[in-house]
Length: 213
Image 1 (cartoon, rainbow, N blue to C red):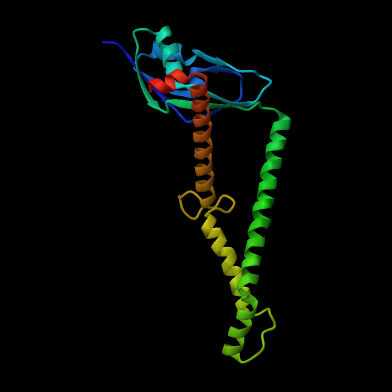
Image 2: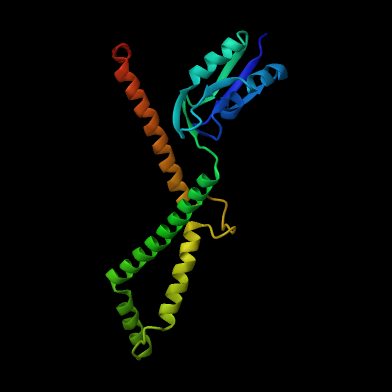
């Protein structure tokens, strides 16, 4: 009875060194420890160390490499048929640039949300509404700085915190934040687009395969 190797791959795998081994991009499981250790250090790709970017690979190529190394091994593939290698060089300048992007996104998100809230309040004329409500309830003219404005501002801030479900290290629940959900959807769409573009390019280079399918 031959041993079985279980191979699991994600859609997008990030690496920080150009020489890629099987253990860097795949989760491996095998009852034979010797085979597993040999396959962990199996070279699968050698990238240009000066060029960061995204590279598309096929799980069939990995299976072919493994079978050449271990011809008697049974392979059970779990995961994506095609996957993306994202190579990012680790450097001090890259780290500084990444923090700069995070800071810029935080500023854009903060001021963008503030502008949206202000334009909404101006569009529906919340200030005038509060003045009318305050006059009807108290019979006095609002100064624009009453309990209505104060409670509305506090409630708006609390509502934003609960909506995003994340403030510093405090989480109100274990659910992902709406921002995390949208970013995950965006990441999935980007990965699907990259893989689809590669498949179309391959079909254009090999039109006979398209006719055969």
